[in-house]
Length: 249
Image 1 (cartoon, rainbow, N blue to C red):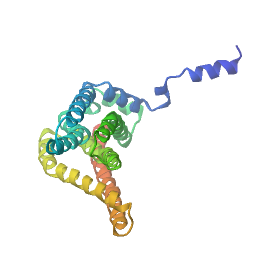
Image 2: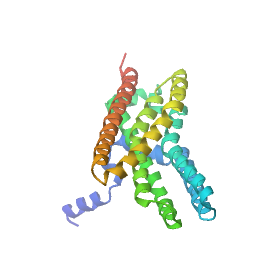
Image 3: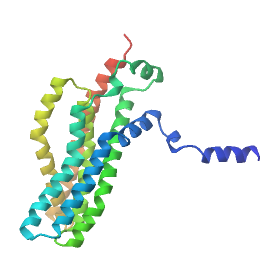
Image 4: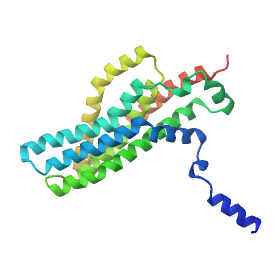
């Protein structure tokens, strides 16, 4: 076999993870193979199957309650679970036994947190994809606007961009800091979900033009600026914690 053929065969035989940063591969492996993601994925399958399946057997009044439970469940999975994980989990990269290796590797604090954020976003996309068949099933059982359903799901996945930033920041906090953040989240998370619903309504109204279009543009700008500011703030504060630990005394 010629040398060029051997080289091309070697390239084709490389693992997909070899194309990515080792830190990103580590975060993917820990996130997707961890018990937390596995249990959340199982919960999505069981809870959605029950809520959607039972919906086709009841009357209109009970359907409205199941619809409320359906969206509440989705919010808990996509937004609540990462925040709970951020409150309870301890960032292993801040352990003193790992710091010398991270210093030798030369990774910046921003890069380390960025890889954790990307891993959380990938997990959110996978969970959102697992929910898509249930949205279609709700459409076939009747009484559901499929376009609005898919739009709401998309915006909830997009909202994970802010949630993941907050969760990564919380993992660098002390116990007292996490308790304070937990109390604040009990107040602001319902507001966050309410704004998501208002955004979807504005998006649906914006398709008709006129005043609805301006409302649509206002909500899009609000989310882009709000999530951008929150993301930069959380990543900056979390990176400062990493810098203080990675700095050689």
